[in-house]
Image (cartoon, rainbow, N blue to C red; front, side, top):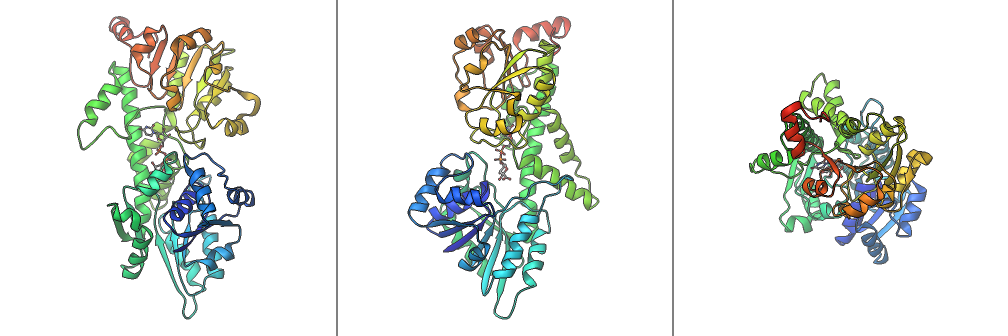
Length: 453
Ligand code: UGA
């Protein structure tokens, strides 16, 4: 099939590369000239495991090309995906200008039979707006359709999620066997492997996308709030998580407590859904609570640090990990950002290491941080280590080496990746989200923990 994908960001590029890998002839369009020029040379402008290699293969095999020309994009295929960005506006509402401008281009250049498939996360009712725009131009012989086909891939595992999604959701204006056939043809390799395809009305498809992310966000705020409660009561969240998660209805997946959820999707989509509801006179109380908990969660680690060091002025703090999660260099809404800002304001010196996001971090913080080449060098003369992203390479460090490098031996584990017993045996003070050390538990019986945690 000949396919055009508008937007070459995380979702658009993964979709374009994935569709090419499935044997289609794909043209990727983006307004960003520099981005397209890099892509034409086979260079991906962000970090996503495996994407660069697959992109190069598809370019070499001639199934994937790129252009800045929207006219070419619309004219060269009958199946047009729109996967452009919908960043949040000041009022949390999604900025639809890029999506609507693809609709305008479609209106301008489309002739004959064409389908506009929207993959961007858009507020409920956006398909109607797209339809209104493209229908203005329809002349005799033109058949234009709008389909909502939300994307559920995660950064860091984007390709795996593209090829093995849990489900394919397709929103249609009417139960059209013709459109169903085309959508099934597009996704045949996945459907043949047993991936369910769900056809719904168009508004429900739009809601499904927001509802999925809002549920995931709420689940995380639930476990984070529970972790804070465990800390207060002397329980250990990891035991509680296991015990609760063994109930098959709950499970332990996507239930890891930490310093809060970040990224370009969960916080943005949760905020947007709350805002959309408000505008229609409805209050999403559970989701508002999830949002509130998440805004406070990064500061848990600083509160713990302040119990040990009431003043951080002049203290050297090592930071491991900055991206919002492992497998990506994305810093959008990363919990590391408010943490680092707060520590800088308190006068701390920050020595930061992240395997892939240091360049992006430098664009935000400039000379305010010390950027380390590896995780051990970030520990030089530091009083404490804050672990903010659970990259695999941090999981088994040489604690004796760490001890020799650090001036004082405090570890604040924002992702609970270390084994408390092992770390404490090595002579470190250890703080993990939602648990107390055995001695502190004992002390807490006598005098409520000395550190007050
Ligand atoms: C999220 C959704 O998971 C995808 O299904 C969706 O397609 C995507 O948004 C989107 O709308 O485009 P992503 O933003 O890549 O994907 O990140 P997640 O894997 O959902 O992680 C979000 C945040 O939750 C991260 O900061 C992560 O550290 C945190 N998290 C995740 C936890 O704190 N605990 C967990 O157990 C899991």
